[in-house]
Image (tube, rainbow, N blue to C red; front, side, top):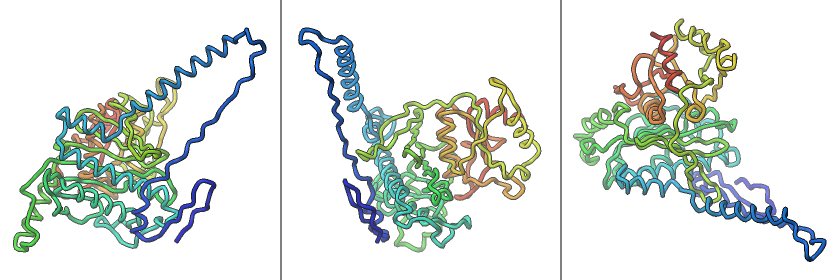
Amino acid sequence: MFEAIPTSSSQITFSTSRSSIISHLFPIKNRSHHIRQSFGRRFASGIRCKAVEITAAESGIKEEKRKKGRYALENLTTWLLKQEQAGNIDAELTVVLSGISLACKQIASLLQRSSIINLTGVQGTTNIQGEDQKKLDVISNELFCNCLRSSGRTAIIVSEEEDVPVAVEETYSGNYIVVFDPIDGSANIDIALTTGSVFGIYGPDEQCLFNIDDDSTLDEARQRCIINACQPGRNLLAAGYCLYSSSVVFTISIGKGVFAFTLDPTFGEFVLTHEDIKIPKTGKIYSFNEGNYDLWDGKLQSYLGYLRQPGPPNGKPYSGRYIGCLVGEIHRMLLYGGIYGNPKNKNSKNGNLRLLYECAPMSYLVEQAGGKATDGHQRILDIKPEQIHQRTPIFIGSPDEVDKLQQYLA
């Protein structure tokens, strides 16, 4: 049992058991304090200071605008309902997306307290890729799966942490295929740096459902599930990510542009803060893990050499930024432009990122914002995975920057 240091406003007790971890999901609401300011008396009863009158009038207008702005804020639930009413998504997809957003809120809460409630470090297990699993890798995967099962609209779950696609018994309608990486950049958890979740949603496929009580058809049915889950990214109905950093930002596209919602911890709601995001056509930031420079081919090395040379508009080279978290890289790129690359190298012939639940959803988002994504030869969204955990090289970002890269790789 861990006990937080008591303050004047609250005292919080935490338990290291998993049930207690999941029960403490949302942050405590902050109490607002009103500060009153007083003005000095007028020197003469017959004289009024016009400056004070103007200031008071302006303050009243600003306060009125502030109040109107506060109540005009649109949360994710309202936005989804509007999209449903407009015919952009159906009711079942609305429920699935709401379930994913709930999982993201729960993960964000656990990340904020991971050091306090002993959720740092490794779990002692490995996933199918042979990677050591962090404690939060495992718990976040459970949270995602539980929220998707509870929605009753998900037929197949594909996760980085699961060996094979998981068929959901509790499906009443919808039958969507949801692919996700519950924690991207989990190496950053222990040092409290940026992490994120990535997800994509494919259309219903009733042929993939099977009777789990009938063992004779299990292998055949499971194989159908794998085949049906391996769809090219162009078939995505929705995709998004949740960024866990100084703010928690839920970014989504349903094929009608890209929208970002920031978690308001006071109310526990995602609020629309970035509407119809458009990625800049160019950018002066590049994100490559240059520790692998000597393992890349000569054409890519020449491209990196170009980025390091002084150039227009200010005579400076591109700035290198690398977070070690795909979600963080893409989020910055959507707002500021630039290019991100995770290429193949001599040790990883197919790159390091997974096509189905990392590259395809992110490429979908970036293209919806006006950007481009390629493996160096073809559009990422046109690649059909042959395996659930198939890897691919990826170059993604501002359209002009990706075009420049392809000129070097041609």
